[in-house]
Amino acid sequence: MTTKIHTTSNPGNIFNPQPFGFSHVAQVPANAKIIYIAGQGGESDTQGTLSNDFRTQVACALQNLRTALQSAGADLQHIAKLTTLVVDHSQEKLQIIIEEWKKAWPDELYPVNTLIPVPRLALDGMLVEIDATAVVTA
Image (tube, rainbow, N blue to C red):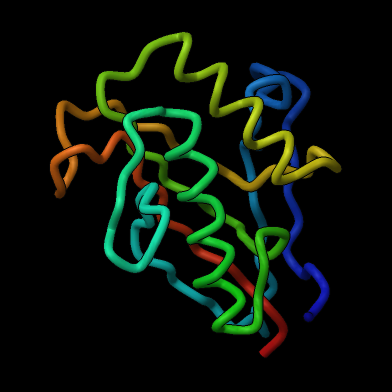
C-alpha cells in the first residue's frame, strides 16, 4: 500500500470540525494519481442485501469503500474528499457517523467531507451512500 501524500488542515479561525469527523481543507500535490470511487451503499454482500440498521449500513458502506479503494491500490487513509448522503438525516445519525469515522480513521486525520441529507437514495432500503476521491503517488 502506498503512503498518504495529501495533507489536511483546519484553519484556526473557523469552526473546529475534528469532533465531527472531518477536516476543512485537503491539499493534493501536482504529481498525484487521483482515484474516484462511486457512491458505496451499505450492502453487506454481492446480492445487495441491506440491513434496516443505520449503523450497520454505515459500517458496510465504509467496508465497500475500502474494498473499492484497495482494488485501485489505495485505502481509507488516501481519501482526500468524501461526500456522504444520508436519508432522513438526524443528530442521532450524525453521532453514529462520527463514531464509525473514528473507527475508520483512529488517528483522527479525517478527509474533507460534505454530508448531504436526502429524502431517498437509488435503491429501496438504502440509508447511506458514500463516494470518495483518493490520491496516491503517480
